[in-house]
Every structure is written in C-alpha cells, then in structure tokens.
Image (cartoon, rainbow, N blue to C red; front, side, top):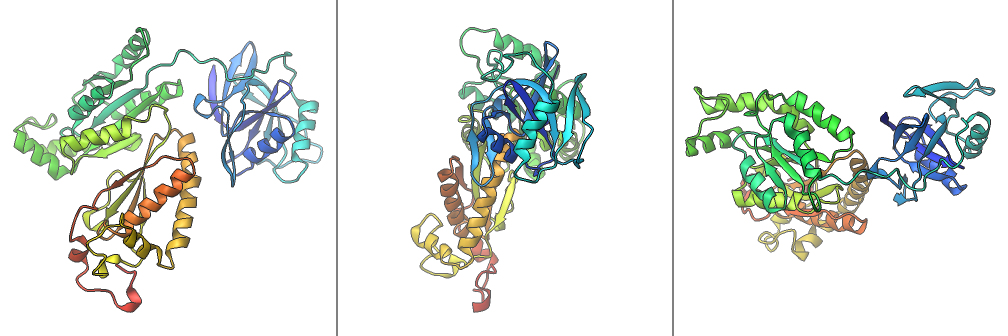
Length: 458
C-alpha cells in the first residue's frame, strides 16, 4: 500500500518524523534547521508512505528525491534517505503546555501525533525531545541511504488529443521523427497493454505517443482524465498534449478538404465542432501542453512539436517566453500573461520604429523608462518563485507571454531580458517572438502619438 501526502519528512538515527501543516507553515524551514543539527532529509513538500514489513516507511517521490526548497535561496540538494515513520508533528496545531499525545493512522498503522506550533528558536530541540519521548520504536538499521530501488525505467507516454482537424495526425508523424512509437486512435483499455509490451523489449525503451479523440469507441473525457491521474499516481510518466484551433479555421479546413466532421455526418461542420469542443473540454483543462494550430502551417506545427517535446527527456519543466502584440490577440496557449503597455513606446521614435526589441537601441530606450527596472525585478522574482512550484506539482510545460501593443518593441525587449535572468538562475527558457515580424500593428491601433503626459499609455 502506497500513498503520497503533502508533508515534509526528516530522519534521525533511522526514524522519520513527518512535518505536517499547510503551505507556509514552516515545514521546509524546520527541516533545514534539523538537517543543520545532523538530521537527514527524507522528502520535502511531498512524502510517499509505503507499508513495508508492518512499518510505515517514508520516502521521496522520484522527481523530488534529494531536493529541498530553501526560501530566499532556491532549490538545494541533499543526500536523501528513506526510513520508518516514528512521529508526526503538526505545525499548524495549537500546542498544549502538557499535551496528551494523539494518534493518527496511515494504512492502519497508528503514528503518534504532536502539535508543536511553528514559532520559537527551540522548535528543533522540541522535535528531538518529542521523538525520544513519544516516537515509535523501529527495527535497528531501517534507514536507507537512498530512495527505495525503482523498477526498470518505463518509457514516457504521451497522449495526443484535441479538436478534429487541429493537426493530430501531423503531430504524431512529427513525434515519430523524434523517436516516439506512435499509434493513432488507440482505445484507452489498450494503454496498459501497449505500455507493458514496450517494457519487455530489448534495448532502451522508446517513448510512446498515441492519439485518442472523439472517434474512439466509448469516448469519455472525464473517465480518461481519471485514468490518466491513476496511472500518474502509480508512477507512470504520462502526459497529455491537446491540439486546439479556432472554430472558423476548423470550419475552413473541413470545407477545403471536403471531409465530414466525425461528429457531424449529416449536419454542418460547425455543429460537430461545437459538440466536440464540449466533449473534449476536460482534456484541455487537464492537458500538460496545449498547442493552438490556428496560425500554424504543418511545418510550423512540426517545429513547435520538436521545440517542446524533442528536448524534455529529463522530465523537467519546459519554459517558453513568448512576446506578442495585443493587436493580434492573446496567445491561446499562454499560462501567464504580463502586459508591457505601461512602458514608453519606441514606435513614436521615427528612428526606432523600423527596428525591433532585439536591437540594442530599442532595448536601451525601453530600459530607460523609470518604471522598467522595478517592474522587471518584481516579475523576475515572481517567476523564480513560481517555477520550482510548477515543477514540484508535475507541470511539464509553461508558456509565459509578454505583451505590448504591436509585439515588436517593448514585449520583445522585456522577453529577452527575462530570458537572460531565468537562464542566469539555472533555467533554460526558450524564446519565441510571435508577432515581431509583423508590421504596422502599432500604426493600426495608434493613430496619433500620445501627449507628453500619456507617453506610456499605448
């Protein structure tokens, strides 16, 4: 029996203590202070609990093994251990001066639970005293100097789904070129069969990609999401790519190819598109990566697939910084959006207008705005705070959109600066300029230069 809980765990002399409490309760801080006193890290933020030989053993999820978040410093590495749980400490509870120790059960094994609160320099000492006074006795030599051995690595699995006509077949062909074993229109019941057969082959396992859409027999998006969650909970590296496209573009594609929409055999394609969008909505919400193909050619889609999926074999978070122009609409696949239209606009400088934010003169003009430095500092700090959290939660892809009016000057310069800052902090974000090659966007929106008091309101 195995379960994963939101907690931090540390171990001393072969016995683990669970540190419980909501986010911000001080679990990682207390763990760091205990490690400084000679304790060992078991897991930070997520703890895997497994019943082994009658004992509740704590370990780290493979993705987080040996990592601890140190506030104001970042993600730091420690040599992890696994150990039987002897005590649980509630940092959000109300401690009593002379408490009665409660008990809490996981998988039928009762663990002493003590409320200690979270304040005071003596808290690490209290944890050590509590472990000696109330901790469960465990067998000698139970501590393990590394996470429990994992089974032979299974190939990563990628589900490709989305709107009919959005490019699923082209995406699967692109994935084949990247080394995936691709299967289209696969019933969900065969996923485990395909997975098991791939594990038994000779040589290193190939990653798997399979298409599932509304043509699949007994298609049920909610049931599919639940099954994917269960597989991921069992440790299967499985992700979902959703291909989207604007309704009018899908209608045009079906009209040009003279194909019937699979959900509208005797009706207009628009009816089938609307029904399919409703049926697949749960998949879009749960998707790790959404690619909108409205403005993409087949070559563009293949390039986007290669950029996003051809270099993420380490299973980490893939970050993309995208500059764009509000005049062309918000990027459909953006997770975070920052608006740079408060900055002075180089469009009004005749010498700078033909240039882009990639040119040093434009970048210097944008950076000279008094609001630039404090804003970029705060945005960079926010991103560096968020990225580790997205990674811990298993998010595979993150698109950060930086917008200005036309997408040629301010957004491009800011996206370039943020890329440099994230790279200096150890991340490797990709940089995409969606609208930098477009001309006339600012002119279409801004028919006259702002007054001297409105220089940044464009």
